[in-house]
Length: 478
Figure 1: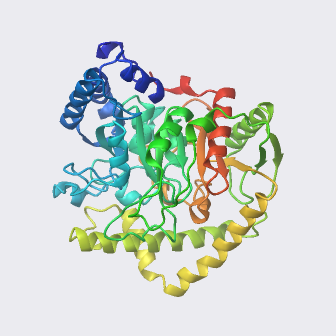
Figure 2: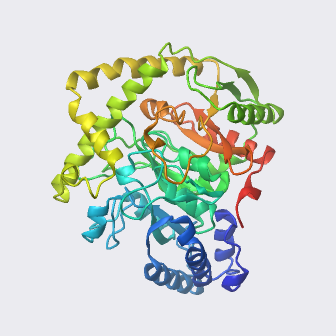
């Protein structure tokens, strides 16, 4: 078996898994290689809240013995995976939610979440818990616990949020793949900022067995999904983590062959291209890069047309509405925290980010009628998107409206920042695909590919076609 120094930390997850199963790479050597990358780059990137080095080494030794005994636990046998320190609980491992108070009190997860169980049952090695803003409340990764996470593409820029630690770990070769969660773009925004692939699955495909509140993801749909360096890697992980779970009231028994989708041609797909979802102020350089990616999809065989969504809602009204759904969702989060951990976040301004306190203050002022009124706007947008799908299989938009942000920035709650959150209202599957560099030190533009509910396979097929036409892997700072 190869030693750790011979292992490329930027190898695809699929290829790494194959080499481990063929006993070309020893799981212990693989883990040591990634731990070495973390040791070398963590001070610069700040991707991890907790590095589970001893757990990873123990799991790798067990995986190695299983291989020696002729046993392969599953398709991720021996592969190091990073978990976002938010929903991805691992029993016995410190869990902070990105909150200084929780982290410093030494809170340890009492149970393992359903998604982590599925990853481990497939043989994954948990290598650490990645950074997130408190409870994932904004589109950049920064908190008062360990501070901001940098994009490996430009360490003066923020990794995006809220799954910034996961995206940065993948882009820096500090994990083979990582898990994220997405309530307003929290997988897709950091995927764009770090130049990796991120997939937000259809609502209900990946189980969320949250407790004590199993119904906290409905008004502003929150999902979990992978951040990877290739589309095929994401498909492999989706095959592992999706499927009906009896402890998630939103779980659906839909079966999709994600890995097969990656190989599908896109000749029969029709794609509508909206450069701005009618109202977003998209940077012209980003629009140009995404337009060129749409041309690449057309050259790959898809039928592509520029479209207007015709939702008829101003950006101001959309932002006012999302502020209500998002802020009131986090009032519910704060109530659960007080119930389970015994901390009223509002009473600790020195330890909680001002941005979260401001969000809670907004939510505290909202009424039941305010929340009810948002349903009218959300329905109007949902119907307009569904009308598009009467003609098109997929929609393509930019992921971000702006170039990368400073490592320390207050733009994380700027609703004009990303074209992602409308699809958390609607529940459609959406992926962020890197499509090209902007100017030096200004980041990588990304296209958002949005599919019909439970047609994630078409999203992956188009994403893979775009990856073949405009490969992005040379962006990584190897």
